[in-house]
Image (cartoon, rainbow, N blue to C red; front, side, top):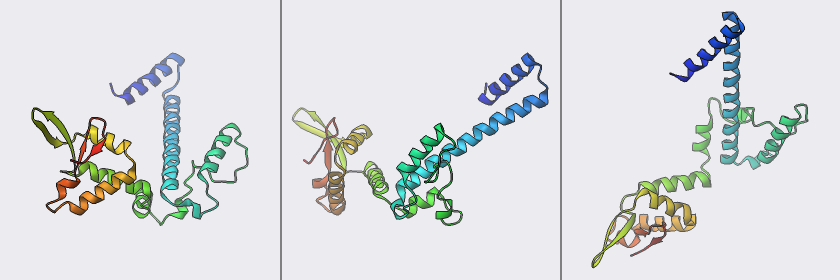
Length: 196
């Protein structure tokens, strides 16, 4: 049975147990659904604000502070009448700071940060063919084949980003030449890279 039907079944059982009219049952159901939707909207706004804080250089605006806003939200949970000097992350605080009809997608495209560039580099490396290999030792030598995603992820997670970027840029520089094999990496079972 679907989740919505289970919930409706529970409300019908409650109305039968307490002899509630159908109108009251619908009112209670709509109230609970509206409360759920409001909580979802607050949660969505909270995470949107966190992401925009991290993507934009909010240090340009001294009236915005992520740690202060988080702290005041926590204080407000305990004391709803507490004075706020920073905007709540549960409100759309960036609405008037973004162009009309622009949202999080626009911020991601317009403010490429180090996090954005790092993730873009990782995605490019994961999709790059003939760059990351693994060796399998056999009698008289070894055979090489494309590294599996598990080894690639170990490599990306364990190695310093500066080294990853340097190796990848060297590979891209020599990619379409006869010397590109000199810049391919071989990953061991722990994701440690090595050249031939």
